[in-house]
Image 1 (cartoon, rainbow, N blue to C red):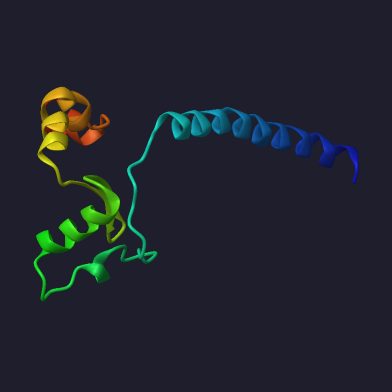
Image 2 (cartoon, rainbow, N blue to C red; image 1 turned 60 degrees about the vertical axis):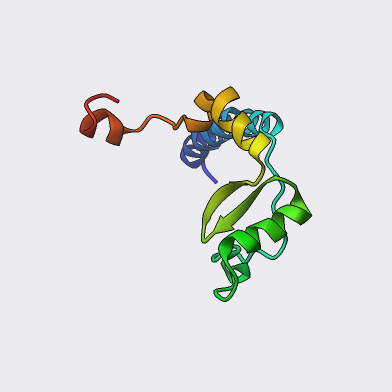
Length: 119
């Protein structure tokens, strides 16, 4: 390789390295602070837990059986979307009274800014 190729390759490698260093600590910190609820086994990659929802049995009965195995608060995936299932009145009370601000908050988006008159 001649000098011009080295002069082009060095800034590209340096930029990739700096962006990796800047990105890596954020993902580690957010994973350590965030404690996710348990998830039942049997989820498929794209459809999630939809196969476990039997049309002959009510959804509430299926979720109650999952709650017996995983506890009163757990998460399932319906398709690609994660869903939090709260199956206990004490947990519901804690979600909607004690932690209501954190539970109902959403990240800011340009949709809400422009179409909902700045939130």
